[in-house]
Image (cartoon, rainbow, N blue to C red):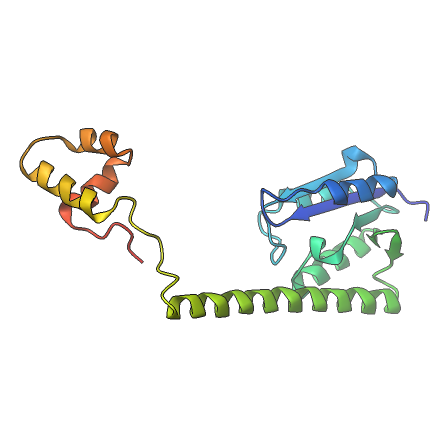
Length: 195
């Protein structure tokens, strides 16, 4: 395949790295300036993925939009279908690693649709397992939501000292290294962490 390549890499969290994906692109002769990256996105939706939008804008007729793994590109069948249809309409092929697929070819389309289906299935299974794990942790008392910023003895001291006029809200906030709104909620009895 002689077409120029544009690479798209994605990782789910800001802490994860895209070094391996980038190295794979460079091995496929994708120029470094044509590698677009999104960090901190799950891939289940296209929304707010500036790197994907830039990569899609950087391709032209005869180029190959390339990813290292299908789930780096999309984990939603409908969006994958829309993007692949749009690329195909512009004469752009889809590269999965070293392999290149044509969305207009029935076998290429079937293969990519199957990958999209599997990627969405895996994402849904992951979400289901997370929900089940959280439900079990909540049932066992291990998932209690966000805990108060200050322990109850400190909260009692803050209420007492403020009631006695000993110290201001601003001084209490500075002393306990919290925001004034936290001190206000403690003093006035509003729940600190409403659900």
